[in-house]
Image 1: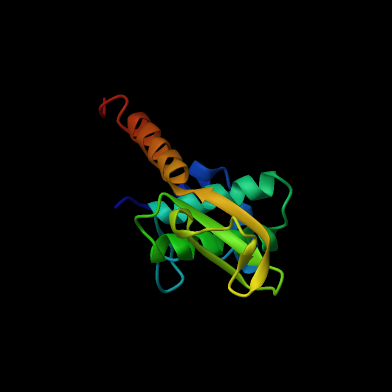
Image 2: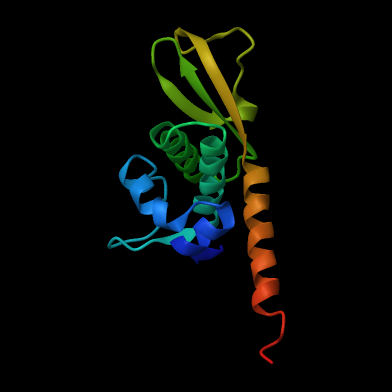
Length: 147
């Protein structure tokens, strides 16, 4: 498991470090690891940060993008082996996320209500983006071999 500071998480995902504390206070509280107010972020926290920044860059508000990233991060913890996760919102207002492979939306009706929206997150892609960012950073850190 890869661990990083919140500063590195921000650097990798393109999240402005100075704004991140304000964003967290305003609803982007999706980082699940850490204790005593200190963040020790893991790769899945960083993957959720990538999803958060994708949503922010697409024009979603801090609160909406943060809620989506938090739901994604919690689902990643609940279903660690899932390659894809789908967030489903029903007309009844219920929202849930589960692995895409176990979800049948073809009828447009789930759990006693019509499907309003369904958004699939490719967790493999997000984790791959984190891995590439970490590997690129390692190459920079060790580029001169300490000389």
